[in-house]
Image 1: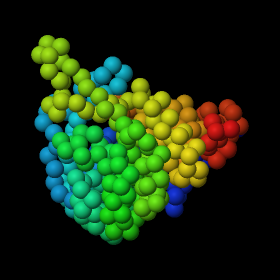
Image 2: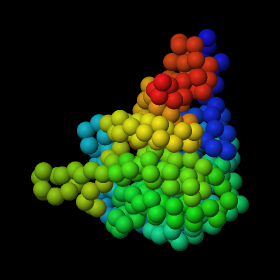
Image 3: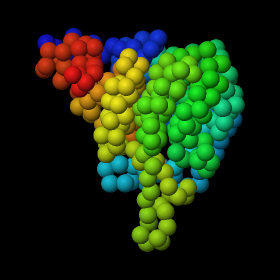
Length: 306
């Protein structure tokens, strides 16, 4: 079997995608920045950096530091706001024939609703509700730690009229309960997961390396954590659509996500070192599937559940 005969098509709730690999919010910019490295239309979707209803400067520098094979960041969701993004960045993505998923954030349910309302009529396939960024000064804004707060955020975001994917945190004590609450409130899917809480120390100064103090750990080392979240939510919630993200750096990682129960995957931190990483992951997947006689993702999705 030839790799080109393999289909990576999938669906996440009501959203049909020609391929299962997407970029991850916060790792591929706001527009067509990665177009110099590959055809954006060949990816499942471009998920843009999270946007609020207002411009936001983010956290003090330094914002990013290496952490062994991983990365720790506390960017703090800086961005131009939804209105400026629709005017300045979305047209370039659409010109590249990319499927676009907008990511939104806020410090309250009302702010999530305001960001969502500004996306009414936008040419986006879905809206990813970032309820789980650990890098805000107000840690109470980690909505994905609370069943009630998650439900309130999702309900507020429904105003956009788009399919909602809710990005949840691996730091919550009961991710299954939070995922269930998100769906009951109107989400079509969950994205599992965001970064893991971490800290780096500059041993010359004895102080935290990042300007914000702590940050979120991402990259290959967090793959087992993300896989466990996907596996547990799939086992508990059956056919709930899941987007797996966290530590995916190659085709093997992406296939493991699919076998754990993900409908699609996102490639994030790997793109910083290798901007072609999302396309390479797709090529790796096709080659493995060809060698093993697997024609479609549905043949292996959830295989780890027996």
